[in-house]
Amino acid sequence: MTTELKVFIMSWNMGNATPTGLEVVFKSNSIENYGLVCIGLQESTYKSDQPDCVAEQLNEIIDKALGPKFVQVEYCRRAQLQMFIFAEKSVRGSITNIEKQVENTGFLHVFPNKGGLLCTFTMSGTKLAFLSCHLTAHEGVKHCKQRNDSIIEILGGARTMDSRFDVSEQSHHMFWMGDMNYRTTYSTVVPKSKSTKSISPSSTPSPKEEIPTSVDDVDLQDDDDSDDDKSDCVDDRSEQMLSTYKMIQEEDWNTILDHDELNREIREERVLNGFTALQPQFPPTFKRVRNVGIPLSNSLAAGNGRKWNLNSTDEVQTFYDKKRIPSFTDRVLFKSMSIYAANLSNDFFNSCEDVDSSDHKPVIAGFTIQLNQPAEDNIKVYNGLIQKDKGNKKMSPSDITSSSLMKKKYTLELVLSDLKGFNLAEMDSQMFGGGSDPFIVVTLDPPSLLLNDEKKYKKSLIKDGVVSSVIKHNLNPSWGEETMTINIASIDIDNLSKYCNLVISLWDEDKVSANDLIGMFNLPFKDIIDYYDSNKGTTQGMVFNKQLRNNSELAGTFSGCISLNGNLEAIRQQFHDMDKKVNLQDEVNAYENFSSQNGCNCVVN
Image 1 (cartoon, helix red, strand yellow):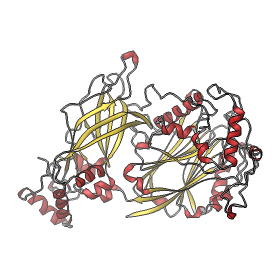
Image 2 (image 1 turned 180 degrees about the vertical axis):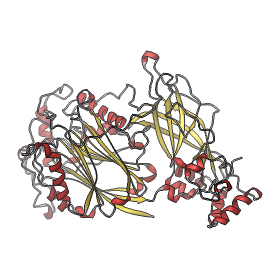
Image 3 (image 1 turned 120 degrees about the vertical axis):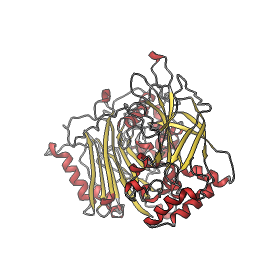
Image 4 (image 1 turned 90 degrees about the vertical axis):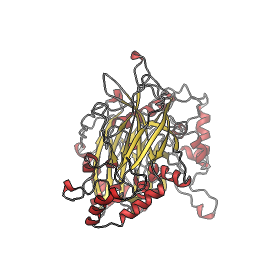
């Protein structure tokens, strides 16, 4: 069973001016058709008769513009960054597990003029994440590198859900928005990849930071008009400006995007790996002249294909500040866990020319999500559900994983072998010889499906997972003949394919401090089943080779072979036979008689 959810996203750098035009934006985009609305704001303080109440005034403005159909789900603020999440009243009750976090990336990594706001929650079994950010300003490769590093820092510091991993690897769908400040550039100089130790939480995560809902209105706005380092740019800057104006006048958005820093950094895998950046098909949103907007063309209906009324480059210049090359700084990105990728679609991505109080134009995007019921409500778990010492009552997943009677009954066994890492990130300080001391941890999503008789722990961080041996000081480790056995508390093949992932992570063992995450990836159970369905009768396991990621940064690759113990069709038939037993007595009889029956060879002995 799935439910369709419409999501509306808006990102706007308000330029520290009183906001105008929000009602028009929401009305013209039929906001009443959406179930979720997320609004991320930057430079969102402004002069007011009641300066201490600006946040409350802005909240009231947005609430009034949305109308009575919506109720606020969450609000995050850090200085001039604000994020509002609203839901239609009829769906608010399906939202649970709400968490929020912030990460400052401003001056000294303390000032909140730059950073990110994160909110995550579960909606009808679908884990959603919304992140609004404001990154380092200015043109030049040095500042582009700072933006990349800030993204890594935000993902490393703003942790919700399982704090061992960044939120982009855990959420089913994540939406990233904000004034990201990536510029149009004609330079051939690019940032170096981050070579220092990746940001990773400590083994015992620190308590969630209390997020204030009000702060002193300190002026932390960037002086983006300042002349900064452009030593990596070509000499003739005026030619660059005129070339960009010409592209705008001709609505040649794709050529401008060929010079877009964000697209380049994602394409060259330096940051935001796994994310998709929506591609603007509208005039660059920065740096704009205030109180004017580019008008729509009256001749669009006549068939000339022009959407905007721009007749010359001279006219284009009247809408842009001549100190900056026009750029798509305001962006929306998304990422879906591969098993759920088909459940998300982008409906539109537009700018709002009628909103003219700022030197940025707002951007808006619409998405459609097919929500699924919780995995635990769909995957049928028979292992250990009926036990006499439990009074013939059904047991919870926590009872199953802790039960001594869970063995050898209606479980799947997966075996990982030929495990190797390549070009792993170096986690240890050069002071101690550099390198990494990697070991592997395999868990499941949902975690309650993992049966692990020998719960191995690596300090306080690694628990409820299957853990390998440690290979000392090696960035290209091989575990040789060592295997890892994963027991799954279900033989519900079809629903496991829909909802289950293996979560494989590599860690650096540290004797004197916390173990550090090198990188991780999700391996959909569906990939394993599809392999065996496509290679019926095979005795060979599925070979995989996956990129490791940490805070959206590449951290090496990991390969191996994964084998299913048992015949897939026999397992499906066994599940079908058991699924027909719908009442408690049938389950009890099945449990008592199982040892005398001829089961399939998926049973672990």
